[in-house]
Image 1 (cartoon, helix red, strand yellow):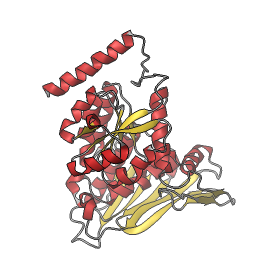
Image 2 (cartoon, one colour):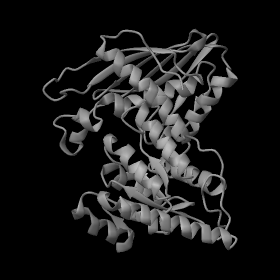
Image 3 (cartoon, helix red, strand yellow):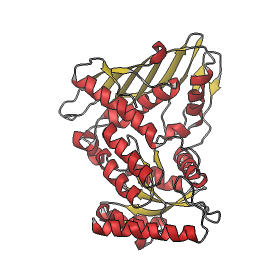
Image 4 (cartoon, one colour):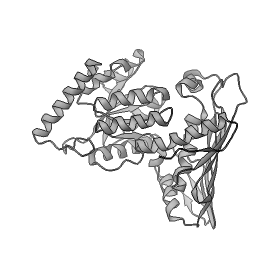
Length: 374
């Protein structure tokens, strides 16, 4: 711990020296250096999402770049260094992540690990003076998420959650209609997100482990939950949820399928579902004078929709990993310009408060459970 604090203090001293020399410091903690065009990003966790989508997407971005890696799998390091020209000084393991405080080449850590590691890694990154991007769900529960928000605030760094759909144009259009109400008042909503893919766990075995944040609700259910919240523009007051499995030998202690109902203000009800045993990918909003829907609504590309008046919502971002590139570019611009994030840590905490209530309801046999207000 002493070593970590020493490294952090050194970096703070260097920052203060920079300020004395006239370097600009934004109120939100980002260096506003006009000569620096791209933020250096270190991917924390080198699983399938990092290797297959985030690393290639960083090569498409205009405002950030892949600068480093953090991994608990030493055998992956050589390949990543060769492929992305990553110097030895920008390679870390989890135990040595605190040393990133002394590395000016890295501005952001992007946490792409099993869910139980999100909070401890985010706290290390924040204390090292690095901005934190974190995959969803941001933590195991709301208390952990709130601790992450506080740590980033106290260390004057930005915290963004990897809600890629909040950067997808059709999703953003649907969210705007929550306020515009082109078909009158919203009555009901349906959101389902799931896939039939698990047979034995394989490389994704952690998604079957409750202690590491496994289960369909954490992984896919967040899409349905965040979509329902975003498309109503409201926070649910209460939830009821039921959990079930058709393969208890595989899903021990985690949910294979979760069905949940969200009760919002204004009498709006959202019926949602998520699953690791059934393909589902649809978001529909029914209003007093019409409806609009997307299917698929949370794919990596090709999210398309339609409305009752004949409007067609075409896919616009292009093939994967364009969505991830857009997400990271927008987050980078928010840091560089000191502007609001589209999915800040507080947004992740709002989902976690609902998740806490969903899990409590499921444990109680589907009883209506109040969502803790923020």
